Amino acid sequence: MKSLARRLAGLLGLRVFSLAIVFLQTIALTRFFGPEVFGQFSFAVSVATIAMLAITMGLDQVLMRDLARVGRERAAQVGSWVVTYLFAQRFTLILSLLSALMGTLLFAVTDLGGVYTPALIWVFALVPFMVGRKFIESLLLGDHRPGASLMGSQMAQPLAMVLGVGIFMALGWAAELGTLLTLFSVATILSTLTVFWLARGLLPQLMPAPGVVRPELDHYRLMQSGWSFALITLGFVIGQHIDVLLIGIFGSPSEAAVVRIATRLAEMAGLVRAIAILQFKPRLAAAYGRRDMATVQRQARQLATIFMGSGLLMTAGLLLFAEQAMSVFGEEFAIGAWPLRFYVLGVFFTMICGPCSIIMTLCDQERTASRILWVALGTQIALDVVLIPLYGPLGCAIANFVSMLILGGAGLILTRTRLGIDTTIFSYFRTPHSGEHRS
Picture (cartoon, helix red, strand yellow):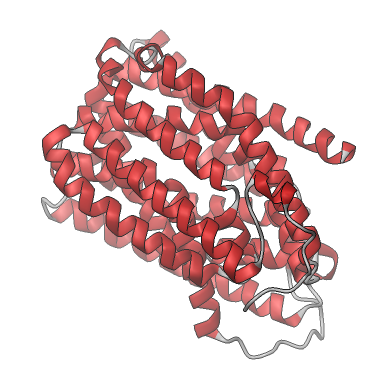
């Protein structure tokens, strides 16, 4: 337990540093470019982020789970890993290039993007870099290197963005969309190169060893599992990106900027949760690979304790000082105080329910988890369509809160019934796990 605490403390330091950079990046962007330009940029990034889930089909998460189970030393000799790894490489490379080409052409020759068209064209051209970075970060996490998996998108990119804004201000560049998109391009490429450099010793070890027997790949089973992973990932970003997208469509760029800031601040309530998940993901996958359900339950209990212990204070602070927190990004963002409160409450409810979605995803119940997500996602979209025209950003936040109730509540119930795992702190009062579960 002491060694785990030391690892979590080290990872917490990295995560806090990365969060500080992201926080500083958002302040710099909103203060320098204003809500209108920042809103157009946020909308385009949200579209690209959701598109990447369809492009990767969750295969990055499948590789992370399977690498954690077999280990980097054995990966090249395990035929099932080899065929999955090579297929995922080819599939995502081809699809990301096609998506970048078709996406840029679609928005260039049609008026589908409206006011967001320039940002959409630029961001979609960068999709192959973002997909490649996403895959390498997943492999680093599967190699039990959660700190390294943070270095690209969570540290190198925002750091480059902050430095870039400082340089632009010193040189007197115009605070317009083209300037922001240029900065985003440079930061994306630099962060992608960073993670490839960090994985330079890992990637050669994952290539197939001479003479390894490669079984026939069950494409249907792999894609089914991968798509379920993609839906679970969507569950964690749904509050940020679906809401930004829908309010961008039904509202205005400035309202999209408010929602973007509110969701980013709400993430702070789950700061330690995100760190703990990074540390525990490969450990949970390895324990379930051994069918050691007692260890899975013990780790779920530890995660539940971390979630609740770390989330209470941050949640209380954001609820009490929502106006002040939003105003840091500019006085025009203060109108997002009540939306922020609803987003924070949604995040806190999922922390009460514990790591149910993660447990199901890593314990071969990803299809169940994806079904829960579809219900939550459908509910949120339906409520967004009704509430955004009436209440703007507040309508977005209420819709998100209801979807989080469904996502957390249904996940908690089905994790108990399907796996026999209690993902709340109340598991301390249950009898020890028998090691059996339903398939």
